[in-house]
Length: 295
Image 1 (cartoon, rainbow, N blue to C red):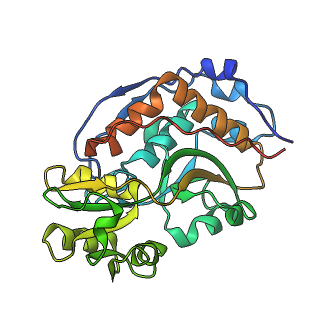
Image 2 (cartoon, rainbow, N blue to C red):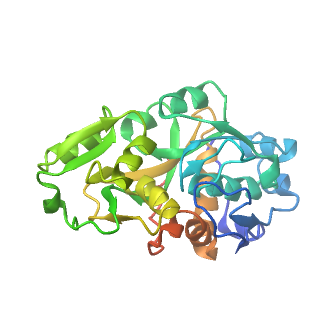
Image 3 (cartoon, rainbow, N blue to C red):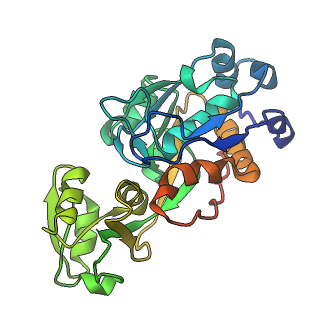
């Protein structure tokens, strides 16, 4: 059975966001936005759906990254993760009548996103999770809620402004990534590091000329160092970030898609972006069109 919740029903949810804190995009002890949760949310869902179960139980487990500032980051002293991905999780939880403080956040790395969904470790994965046909053969992916692409992070005083400018320069990223292969093809000298943070440090101290990976990840680091770093170059790849769910519950796709569309329409998505990745100084983008759910 495919569950589709109408936009009229979503209007009753009344998702309302107010910017509460504009601090560090990667490490903020306060919620970036306040969420108004739905009243009696369970009544809006069909019996037997996973959404009704979660709404009745008042419980949801969401997998996010803990190491990507602006996207999903949780420092050692933080109670909850911060970033655009956790904000999307709060939007979805609110439509189920679940308060942000009642969400069970589970650290999710790239390698365990599909296993966590298949094995039922989490209800959703919102973890810079690019939509691909290969992944959709194993799990459900609704979205995209954000579209990014490979770009460059440079020092604020850098002369690098176009992709042509990287020819002969040293550019770093995570070892073994496709980002390094792509930038090598542009004439750069690739340097690999174990973590993104190591790479950023090399850019900050001038050891390398630039860092490359998804623009969304780079914006998070630029937001942490707005006076020292900037993101340049038009995206030269496309990554469509989606929200993962188990194929055991295909009805979740309609709920996710309608909830995200409602957030587009009422400005909630834009507010969440401005409170996280927008802290880098980049303009708020037009939200991307959402894929149709499988029949």
